[in-house]
Length: 74
Image (cartoon, rainbow, N blue to C red; front, side):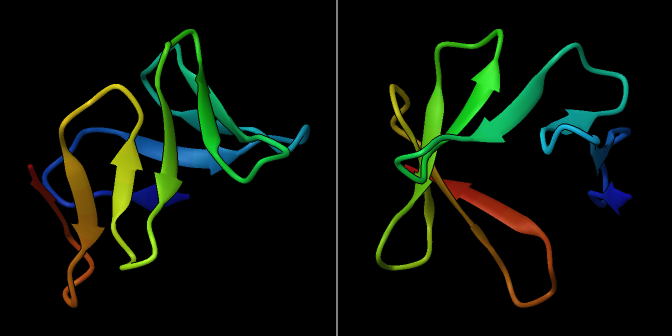
């Protein structure tokens, strides 16, 4: 399972290939166009050419720092 430092959530890949976040009703999947959809949410995300993650419909982008933690920025 994947743990995020400072977060109570852990995630796992389900048998159907979707990702479940433990303690959350949401599951996510990778769409055919390479974007990630969160089930039950209007948002989709993609990895930009500079390696940051954009959430469609949100002004924020996030990146994984060298220490493995995530930083969000506008």
